[in-house]
Every structure is written in structure tokens, then in C-alpha cells.
Image (spheres, rainbow, N blue to C red):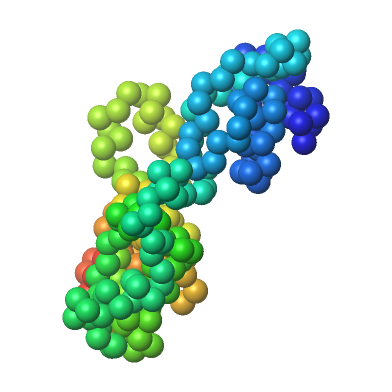
Length: 231
């Protein structure tokens, strides 16, 4: 892999090269090429002076600097003897202790970072919440797609680009990342439904999901609407 990265980076001096691959392998290769010394896990790679080998090859790869945190717990978290990773059962039990019972409908917002570290990540959170509300319960969340209303105040070149903005499609349009990972994860969970409103869109999962978002309880100029997030 070191040789492959050299072949990619050598012709691209002073250019940006995007690396897609297994994070552990990439980290090890950068350590070799850039003379980082000990492998750095769970923290951004530091600014590194190219090794003599890299200088001879004129590899721009060593100009990466901070490339982001790899998908492992931080050294600080691993060294915290008082911290234990949060599990699915802990989340389920905590939600039940808050008063949620089987069959409930629950509107959810999740700040995953507040957990510190969850075994299984956001998938574990969804699974734990589903267990808490049971097969007769329903989870709801809200996220917005890219709104076009403010484009008119932007520079003309931006307005021209946004003329090609994809139309809203509740089957594929994603939730904004501003609201964390939970809305999009719930929206894409098997069996979930999304409401039809292009700006204030809700996703729901569970027995009453269709009733909350897609039942034709009222009529508007845009057609049938659900109780939440209709159009």
C-alpha cells in the first residue's frame, strides 16, 4: 500500500489527493511515509515533517496536517478509568426509567457525542429506542432538506448553480446533518416513512408511522396531508 500511495501522490505535487480506504491501513501508511513515529490512533494526525525518503520522492501527502479523527475512541477516553462505553441495554433501560413504556409514540432528538462512546454507534441508539417503545410503539424525528428560500439573497453565481437543485423526494431526500446523525439514520431504517413536506420533513418508524405522517386527515391545496409534516 505504501508503494501504491507513492505512485498516486508523486505526480500530484502540491495538489490535494483524496484517500478512500480502510482507516487503519491509511494511518499506518501515512506514518511510514511522513515519519510520524508511533502510530497515532483516535486523534488527528499532527503536522509532520516529511521523512528523507518522502523528500526525495517529493510527496505532497506529508502536507496533510490535521486530517480528522479516525473512527476509534480517543486516547483520553481509553485512559479514563471511570468511563465505560454505553451499551444498547443501558440506553434502553435509561429511556424506560424516564417513563417511556411499550406502545408509546416518542419524538426523538439525539446528540450522540453526549454519550461519550456508544458501542455500535447510532445504530445501537435506534435499536435501543425501538426496544423501549416495543413493536406497538413509534419513533418520530424531524430534519430539514436543503431549503431554497434564501437563495435569492445569494450572489448570482450561487443562484445559477442552485437552478439545478434536485427536487424534494420523500423517498430519497436526506435530512440535514445540522440535526445530527439520528434523523437520517431513522429515515433510512427498514420500514421507516418520511413525510411529504419539502422543508419541515418528519421521519417515523413503528406501528403508527403511517398514521402520523401520511393519513389523509385534512385536505389542502397541495392534496392530502398527515398530522405532521404534510404538504
